[in-house]
Length: 265
Image (tube, rainbow, N blue to C red):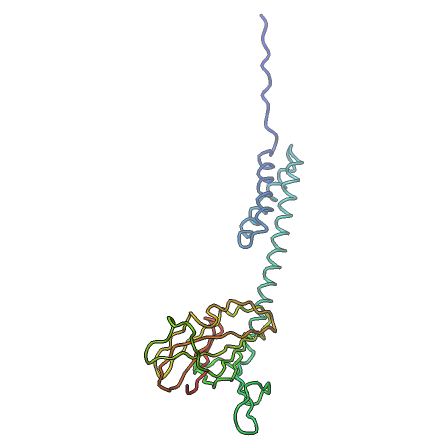
C-alpha cells in the first residue's frame, strides 16, 4: 500500500501582519502630516506604526517593517516642523496686529491761513489730536479735515458744492437739490487696502440724505498699495433749505469708531 504524502501547510511569516500595519500607518502619517490640526491624529497613527514596525523587525518581513518604521519617523518629523512654522506665522501676525492697535488714531484739521480761513491743501499737522486708546464717543470734524484710523487709513471729505444734473429726466424732486463732495483716501498702512470697504452715509438738517447713484463714482472698487491714494466723488440729494450736512465715515465695517464731517450747506 502506497501513501500519498500530504503537502506541508505554508505558515504565514512571523509578524507579517504587524509589518503590513506599520507600512500602512506610516503612509497615513506622511500624507496627513502636511494638513494642520489633522496631523495631530496622523502623528499618533505614525507613532503606533513605529512601535508595530519595531516589533515586526524581528519577524520575516524585515524590509517592509523597516520601511513602515522609517515612514512613521518621517511623518512625526514633518508634523513637528509644519506645526512649528504654523505657530511662528500666527505669532508674527499677532505681533503685527498688536502694533497696529497700539498706533493712535489721529485727526488733522487744515492749517489756518493768514486771513483765518482753513487751507485744506496744507499738509501741516497743526491742530492734530491723538488718541492712545479706543473711544466710544464719536469724533466730529469739519469738511476738509482728515482722520487716520489705527489701520493706517486716512480719509478726508471736501467742502460740499452744488451738483447740476444735465439729464432732464434725472433732476431732483421739488424742494430737493444735489450736492457733491470728494472723498480722499490714503493708505498709510502696511497692507493693501480696497477703497470699496469705506462706509459713508449722510444726513442733512436731521433727515437722511439719499445718495444719487446715477452721478459721481458709484462703486469706487480700487485696490490701494501701501502709500497709495485715490479721490472719488459722491453725490447726495438734500433739501433746498439750508442746514447742517453731516457725513459719517468708517474705513470698514469693523472700525472701532465713526468719524463725522459736518458743516452748513
